[in-house]
Length: 125
Image 1 (cartoon, rainbow, N blue to C red):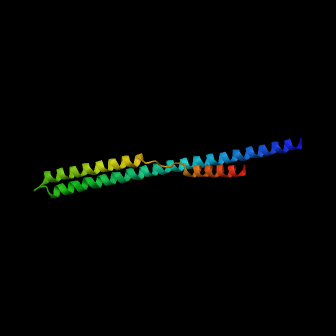
Image 2 (cartoon, helix red, strand yellow):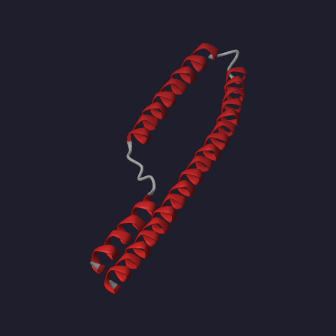
């Protein structure tokens, strides 16, 4: 009778420990998701602002170059700059597609902790 009570208590403690481990891992996962979301938001904001200023600078540089060559080669300059911008845009488009196709290992810390938990639990058995 005493052994069954001890076994029941051990099972309760083991279940409570397992619940705490799962809760901790879920909290870690939620924190990682929040951090990743904030990171992406910051990147999008900074990228958008940088893109805006680069676009303004590029437009002003284009106007400057066209005005500089207004009397002699304005059409050649406009055509050359248009081609240059088109090639640069295509290059960035392909770089974006390449970057988007890469696999990003999300929740690396959570997976590592779960793997450690599994190893520890397997060693105890």
